[in-house]
Amino acid sequence: MSDATLAPRRPRFMLVDKPSVLIFLAALGILTLVVTLLSDGMGTGAISTSFVKTLGKTLCLCLVAIAMDLVWGYCGILSLGHFAFFGIGGYAIGMWLMYERTRLIVEESLAGAVLPPTPQEVSDAIAVQIFGVVGASEFPPIWALAHSLPLQLAAVVVVPGLLALVFGWLAFRSRVTGVYLSILTQAMTLALSLYLFQNESGLRGNNGLSGLQNLPGLDDVPQATLSLWFFWASALALALGYLLANWVVSGKFGNVIRGIRDDEARVRFLGYSVEGYKLFIFTLTAVIAGIAGALYYPQAGIINPAEIAPIASIYLAVWVAIGGRGRLYGAVIGAGFVSLVSTWFTGGQAPDVNLGVYTIKWVDWWTVLLGLSFVLVTLFAPKGIGGLVDLITERRAPDRHGADLGPDQGSFREDEASKE
Image 1 (cartoon, rainbow, N blue to C red):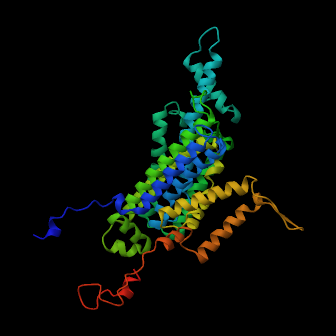
Image 2 (cartoon, rainbow, N blue to C red):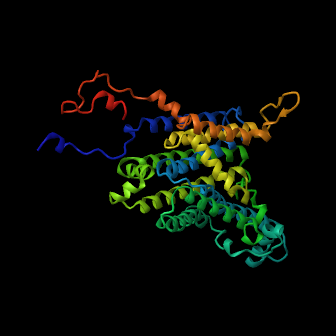
Image 3 (cartoon, helix red, strand yellow):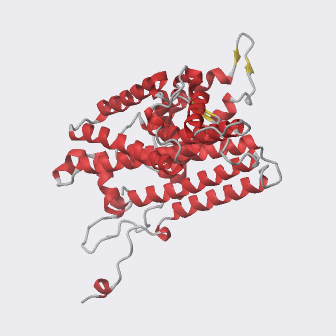
């Protein structure tokens, strides 16, 4: 028996074999430490609370961008509906935040009553406070579990996952692919958004859910500290999501989903269950998007149906394309870069450009600039910003000067190796 046979088999995924993962985790850890030391909540105050929230939300967008890169960059499914799962996660946690916050306010206001209120009276008062803005005074059935934090946290994962599972099963078993699948995902997102705009949806229609930045029972904790807590949670979720995504795309499973992206018919001919692989990736990424949304909207403070509109999912695809799809770090770079630049342009911080006959106001022109960037990247830099990392870390072919690289004469010469 040879030494190679006796040698222990290495695990399929090890951090020592993934320098890009170690670099990413180190960079994220340094960012978290620096923001903590410079924040209003626990540091010098050099970074404002609002900017800490912006950074926390950006990390959540990076997490959903990883999900988009898994489903599109690695599996070849251009989903234009993943921001719907993101919004569902936000609604799920937002329902509990709004219910519990309102319950505490109602109970405090009724504490001085001559007769203690009954549980039904408290429930009715909560319903009036929440739904009075849409002319209702009773809890819709969808709010039946809103009082329970564990159940709503479970809904953050279960509801997006179940919706993706049902939709994906129907679409993939029918072998819908390409642009037709993209249209279907966009139609799903549009239908969900239009439904949520109705007051009858039970989620306050166009008003959405507000006041989510106020955590129940923590009124004495300043927003500077709360924003830092959410920033930490977002950083941890992004780190775990990045590790999970790298594990998924490693080894045989990763090779199969890349094969599906490149030549689905050949992978099916080889005997693999293409539909099963697609369904797994589609469902997993929906769950990741839901978790990202559950962390994002408490930092944003409000969620409404406009957040789930199809344009949001299109923006998500643009972020991944600009960062470089098929590279997890590219998705993170793209989402982080566009999110922060967008905040700078649309927040009034970018100075207007006076051309004499016309003044360019970046608040109005940002979307045009973003669309132009997407076109330019697609035409001239298909690897996106992440391609710059590839240029820096590119491994050159060994300098063998045409010598044989294999055991047989003439096998796998240098010119062939350089094409790999």
